[in-house]
Length: 96
Image 1 (cartoon, rainbow, N blue to C red):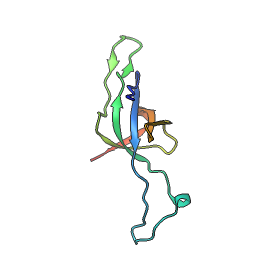
Image 2 (image 1 turned 180 degrees about the horizontal axis):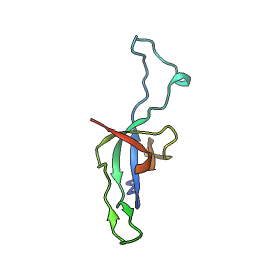
Image 3 (image 1 turned 30 degrees about the vertical axis):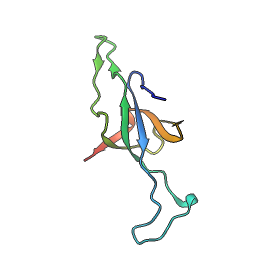
């Protein structure tokens, strides 16, 4: 199944949670934090400018690795993979 976000929405795949600390200790499932980093899988058409009726292009693009806020987006599951649908406003920065 393919999802194409509408308007100013983005489809982001969250990065894998760490299974081990930097010092080598393995973390149980209950101790893992959900990462606030992910990869943009698909982008919508852009935000609609109400005055001109034109689409404003995104600052981010498909394939960018991004940081986002803790409670960003709506979680969905596609083919047993977890994704987030969010707006560009939820993104804090691009990881280079």
